[in-house]
Image 1 (cartoon, one colour):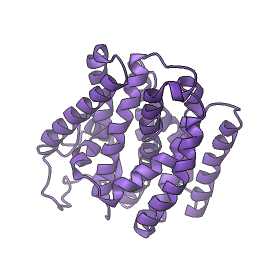
Image 2 (tube, rainbow, N blue to C red):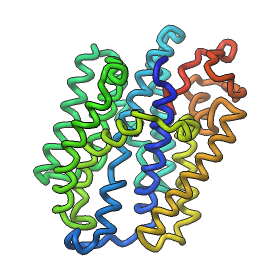
Image 3 (tube, rainbow, N blue to C red):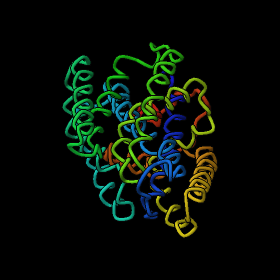
Image 4 (cartoon, rainbow, N blue to C red):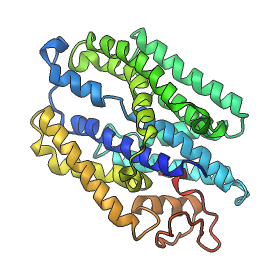
Length: 327
């Protein structure tokens, strides 16, 4: 299946970027108020990381859902039951994880997946795409009118758009340099608009809205020449997402400002990348991915060893799915 390795690498890249915002949230670092001209460090951090990676991760989750459907449709008579069980398990894991990481997103993926992705799996792709656009535009318009902060509300639309991207094979069809150029044209005024929104919490709403431009821009730039360094990290993204929380708690005492925060974020990404490379040399799945698959298929799936590159070997009797069809 085309571009599986690219999606794994992009998933790892997005996960590394999300860690920086998770550090900010979990350490409770005080946020400045006032004008961005007085707090350029805060603005530059927001411009680089605030909602710059989370939308990509949500789209990739929707894509993984569609790839799971495509890869397992011919091997299981009650595929939606597997998907429901998979999403319920993710929701419960997210609720447990929220005890340590209050801003965690897995629970929203699980709940919104049950409410939107599962019903959408019965619909023609044109409906999936249309509903995705509507589900994204509505909260964006309301947030731009200051009705409420975006928060998790764009997630349903992003999940559906990810699902539609697989159904239409958009990655193979799009002209990536042209998309990057178009997004660059939008990103410049979006960044200026965000700059005038104020520092800290005053600029949160604008940072969330501009993230819907900057996130696809960063993703497309990455896909122009995907760095395979992130691929093992993306193949075990669920494990790394949970591990990041533990690592953040371990280094939280070192965070004194944006400089130390960025250094900690880079350090965590490097540690996770190294551990992922070592782990994936020996095993086909990360620990959390393996447990999630066992719950999904409702039986113990052998860890196995990583097959040779390009191998399509499956565990005997196991209705396997493409490796990058899920975290």
